[in-house]
Image (cartoon, rainbow, N blue to C red; front, side, top):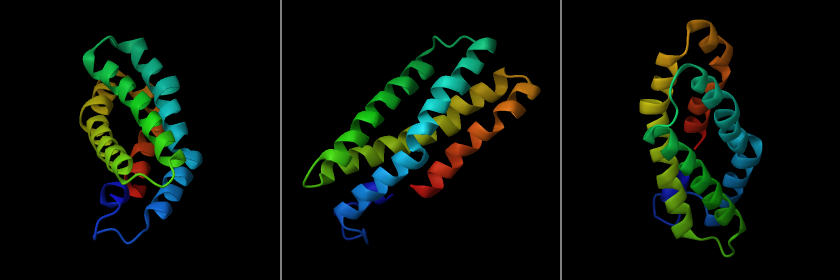
Length: 132
């Protein structure tokens, strides 16, 4: 929400404060969350289901685009409201898609014991959502 509200009357933060929040979020877990999905969750899913499907391809491409936008938001001076809005929209859409499509597919495909092993990775998404 901070990113989507940047530069509007609804924002209580300056663009520079929002950039700092994005940088802090990315360094303190956001980037790791993407890596966990790519290196832990999706390989586990691939053991039990076909991963060459549009939803997974799109999810991974969104990771690349989000990483690119995060880097641009952090490095662009002066802060770019347009880039913040793009990142905010993309993050919101991405998180919703994971919650409604990707994670349910994974949960359905994996046996209970594997889900329990991976449970901490499923909770990171809810933490990210509440922080942003």
